[in-house]
Length: 87
Image 1 (cartoon, rainbow, N blue to C red):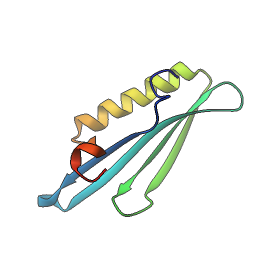
Image 2 (image 1 turned 90 degrees about the vertical axis):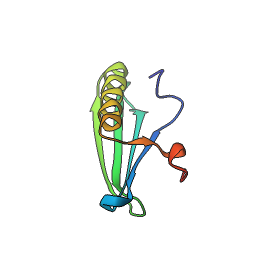
Image 3 (image 1 turned 45 degrees about the vertical axis):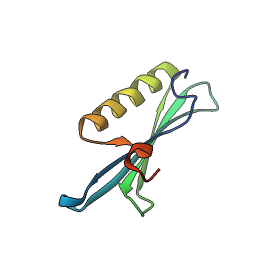
């Protein structure tokens, strides 16, 4: 879990012309049995949103899944929360 030990990834997608204000948070957490879980939280900014947890037996698999999800979201227009001026 070397790449995600620094903390969760906070992404936002804001498009005023489409009335779109969304967030997406990804994090990798260790499990009690030596594996790791990818925890996702997403929704409209200002709400609690929805959550999903996916557990892997090998922490490297969780890291890979988290990186793929982050890449996919960035491809869809999500940017770092700090760069939007609201972080």
